[in-house]
Image 1 (cartoon, rainbow, N blue to C red):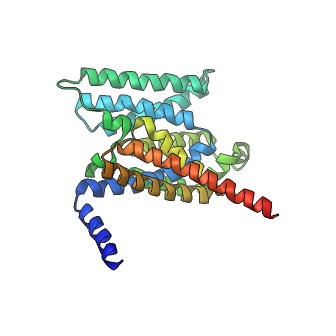
Image 2 (cartoon, rainbow, N blue to C red):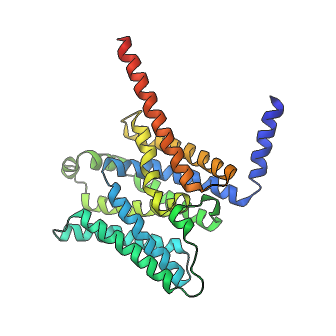
Image 3 (spheres, helix red, strand yellow):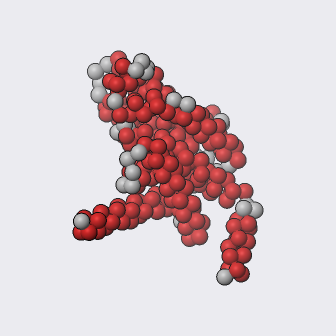
Length: 285
């Protein structure tokens, strides 16, 4: 037993000698924190489709980054922020429905991304890691960007947590307390943009929404307390990400898709477990 434990410790020590494994684990932790906090707000405010629109709009920024020869994720950050603020501004100044605007920005971002990549000189870049994610390719520079964005998100949510709580459950009551709902909404959309940029390299544009919602959905099977949902979602995110990372590394399969499949499998198991426990309690009564 002691020998086996030592072998496991040695295996982890050996893995940490590789920079890409170290970066992947750091990325998984940061992404999980973001999923737990922003994902909870997205689910509570029913902003899943809005997040999908912002996510796909960011593809235009990735294409622009390649075209201009700058870090593609900086382009993604600019595009996703502009898209989120643009949707908010147009929605409030016209009678166009939010779903329609989300669809327009979604299509516009994808179209611009394809156009910029097509115009980029030389061989077209490999977009697989942005579309489907590849946590094993995260660079140290990208980790630094993730740390900065995660600190901003934590500060923005933690410093005015009670305002967010009031905004999530009763906007009219929030207004009566003097909370500026419009500014809070704009800030939320910017934070969603930051979250999406953090998550793109972990699970990819196509699967970002899954990682923002599945850990939260699993946590809500166990509790309705907002703080507990955020904490549990973050913990589940860490477990899903590291489990998916290990499986993808061991079997040489796509990491982003593996993380999502592990998340859904865990959600199904938790759901079944909760129902079994509730049925036993009812039978006991």
